[in-house]
Length: 448
Ligand code: KIV
Ligand code: ZN
Image (cartoon, protein in one colour):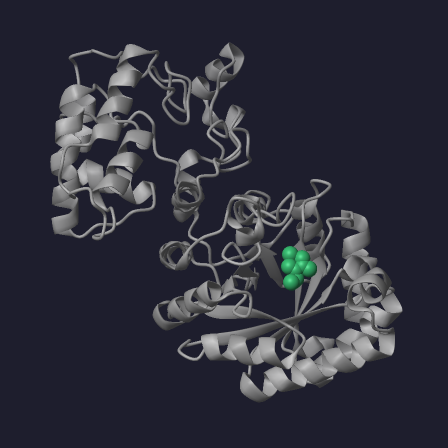
């Protein structure tokens, strides 16, 4: 008889905590676009923003709540009436709303930031959660700076908010200070000591200041946490949050150690990563686990020889399993609409027939001028084709920027194809030599 797998809830906070990282702020339209991709990715909860923070963030949460129907949509609020009411207002149209209330509990924060004592903190947390609960059935509470909070006091606060109606207790390592053994033990203590804990979900929210956000999150899962808070590409305050793709793939690849499951569609990981860096303009670190451009590259001869004989020698997961396009499939002037549509999807864009036709016409003109249309050319072309209607630039004019980039590229050394060194694909198989007239396999694979 098949045993039922324990399900881990994936709470994505790219649009909230992620957006708080320098250079990563997103406008309303951008948040909405990414929210659609998070939906395709299969996250369980989207934290869409902090509605009291600005009118723009309020509108963005409202828009996401109105159109994204499957996942829970969460709005963040400090533990006070104006924040909670504003969050609830923004979530009005959500199919599955959640109010996420937070209040710092560590003595450092109470003394220097909030200037309240522990008893005042306890009362405020209880009142805030009661208010949120009177509006919304699904209430999450976060004791900010939990990992530097006295564990006895932390457990008292958690017990009070469970009594007041919280349904998820999120334990943030706000400053990225904890280590796996300590964080796992804290989750175990909470499970042992907080009355009513069996009726709520424990969640982990880890920051990466010491580079341990994912390791700490995994320790929390092993100790009984059943929700993980994370972001695409690990973006977030300071050194970032735990990276969604690393947690999900750790569970998938090391299932022997982590016998859990998530609802994440692996092949949507890379498109989500690409879309985020395209929207924010913040590139992914090349050696970033899972989504960096070197994550599946094999440069050394010994490694190339090994993967040629058997990919298992140096690959613990396939590029395809996380949606990394197979670099042997090159886009050129012989490529058809189908190939173009697939590559666009891999980069996080889906177009209807008409929009695809527009892009295709421009793509063919570009491909006539250069041999291979690289992902960055295509992204520029897509951006250019979909300039806002108010833009002074006509939609279907030639692509000055893309053509210039292409001319530049052919004048200089051609850019490295992602994700590999120029000569081989992920399995060390030689790529077509530029200028090679024999495109048989390419034509077959990319047929119109
Ligand atoms: O890091 C943190 O403490 C937070 C809370 C608002 C959950 O982001
Ligand atoms: Zn955070």
